Length: 438
Image 1 (cartoon, helix red, strand yellow):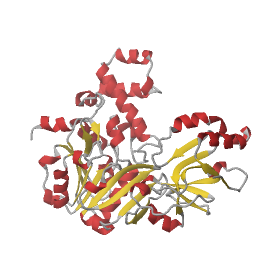
Image 2 (cartoon, one colour):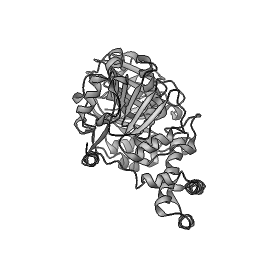
Image 3 (cartoon, one colour):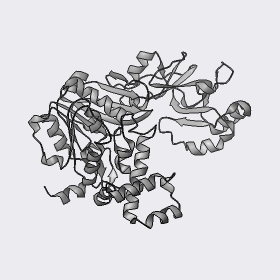
Image 4 (spheres, helix red, strand yellow):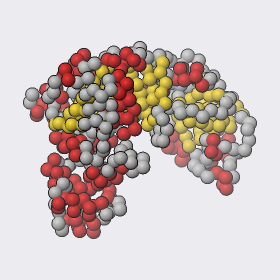
């Protein structure tokens, strides 16, 4: 197939780095350049003197490649990075910014690997459109992995990174177009694919805009017994092929959707959905059920809870409500309420102090009358909204900035647009009373 046609559809942003400029960094001179850049504290904001010092020995293109690689591996291996792990060699992990941003973290990849391990332990897995290898490294805990990437630089980076991350099973990386099937389909027991989601140079949530195109994805689904299609959480799920849909959040951010197919979907129930919540230093928590809509709203009680985005996007809020004995405040189920003080992986708690019909003027008046003493305030005011209300939260926060540390939850509830003045449990006011004004 004509490779020029491929890149007309898929043009990854490698931030000006080329295969030649990155490969130079593996030479003795390139290693010395990397070490010089690594000694610079703030790579992203190098001063003129630092750049001039490097330019005495190396070209601008090589310096750009070195600073890009060093900055990305710092981000990847930081305590909050996607590839932070004791068994990883941070100085050998290389990436470019867009590829790192799009990569699945080790924690999420490990969760997905458990699905494959349960359905087909030790069998060969194809990781199509592998990028820099985020999913491939995780999947290699379940079985040997053949990782395929069309972009030459990203394929090279994935191969290079096999030296940085140790895997249980063998991991092979090849640079090829997945549509040319550079392997024997009959030898593959499971597949994972992360199609590019772009149209006209912009990110797109439309299944029809995937690259490779839906026909290729659906061919993999038909021909391979187990499968996983990584998707944006914003994808129109009604357009997808049959399968079990799972929404995954990591550290309270909904990071991806996964369409499970074949044996894995059958195990999970293809008529249901799942939401999985992953937190650092905690085991994953999942909920599975039939997608439903909220049918009844209630006024706020003592506690309001913000529901994790993966549960909301999977339309499993009604299922969660039944499990935790709470009531819905908003139509999307994003805010729920209870008289009970709950600790739950899917919930963020707020203690309610006052509830009113939303009005900036009334909010400012109440906050002025109930200002927390400066010595105990210890924070800024926080504004959170749900339901597409069109409120400029930044402007409202500036207007109310002197009245912290309240958290104001604004939503469309049973009595219209409502403002609940709350505090997070670590900053609760002394009073246990709740006042509701209408």
